[in-house]
Each structure stands twice: as structure tokens, then as C-alpha cells.
Image: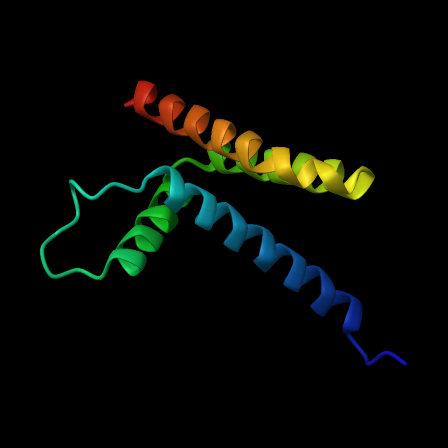
Length: 104
């Protein structure tokens, strides 16, 4: 049984989950103890930096979204590849971060 507008809600939920995953990966790539202001809570500071970087570098965020989609497809095809996807995502995040720094 479905409710009216259920397909729209499904697509909005998938889009929000994809954006949240990109922000988390961008925050993990930008993580550093050196440049955190005194008195700031680490997790929220890093997540806010991830949001800013995702917004400023949209093409890098699209590249990370593609990397996330490829990792999901790899795990869907063969479940033991879940062991490899962490390395693939960290490589993609480091590449997007280096690309962003080279553009500055």
C-alpha cells in the first residue's frame, strides 16, 4: 500500500542521503586537529567544514557522489568487496581534496 506522493518522498529521501554521504566524506577528507578553533566541538566543526567544501566545490562533490555510487554498485555485485570500498573512497576523497587545493 502506498500513499499519495510516496514516489516524490522516496526520491527526496535518496537525494538527501546522497548529499549527507558526500558531506560526511568531504568532512573526513578535511579532518585535521591543527586548524580547529579553541573551544569548538570536533565533530560539528568538521561537519560544517564538509558542508562548506561541498557547497564551494560542486564538481568535486559530484565526483565524490560518483565514487560513492560505484562503491555501492561494487558491494551490490559482490559483498566481500566491502573491504575494499573504504580505500577506494579515501582515495577519491584525497584526490578531490588535492584537486581543490590545486585550484586555489
